[in-house]
Amino acid sequence: MFSANLNKIEYFSKVSLSKLGAALFSLAIFSFGCATVPEHSGTAAHYVDPGQQSEVSGVGLESQDIINMTDKMMHDILATPIFSKPKTPPKVIIDSEYFKNESSTRINKNMITDRLRTGLNQAARGKMIFVGREYMNMVLKELQLKQLGVINEGESASEPKAYGGDFRLGGRISTLDSVNPKTGSFARYHQILFEMIDLNTGEIVWSGSYNFKKVGQEDIIYR
Image (tube, rainbow, N blue to C red; front, side, top):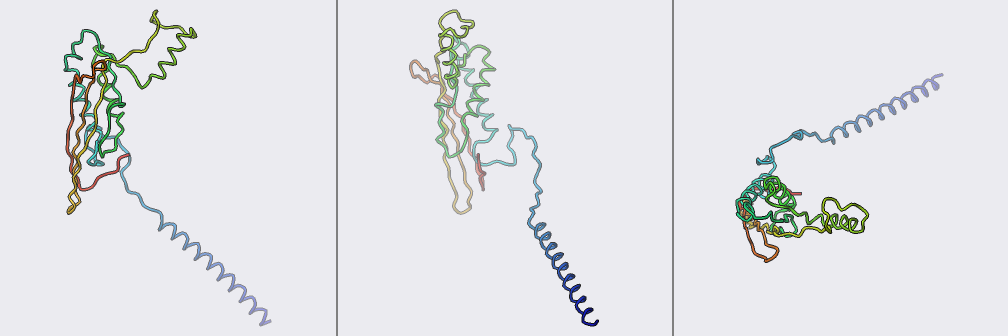
């Protein structure tokens, strides 16, 4: 009788210890999981004025620089007599094909040339004709269908042809960097050159530049 009771005590003791161990193990896992979950206290995404410097900025080209430079170039071009008072509207090509980035700043050149072209197109009011050279493959396919008689030629009764350009935008982005090895601060000078080239003669009929310098202790990553 005593032996049977002792066996029962040992059995319940093992069961209790087993349950206690499982409970402690679960508690440890839960505590570990809670300890490894990072807490985020960042700012929620929100709209900011692209024409103003934001809290995330570095020494490279920023949105406000693109807006300011393209606005300045647009007004300069429209003030040039060859474009402001033409006898016939000149055909102009403005894209990034000959707009080079030779700087240490990472930038999508299309953001600059696209904004300049759309701004000019809206402000020129028919004084300039803009040729979309980057869409040439699309135009050639359409012309081929028209010449084969597959589709109607549209408004033009004569043989359809793609426009040639009279002027085309060229230019480059250049930078000069300097670093102070003692403090780790650095500076970057930007020079952005815009030029309009006569496609018949190679003459530079208009030039404009946008220059600025930024100094910072740390730079940010541009993507």
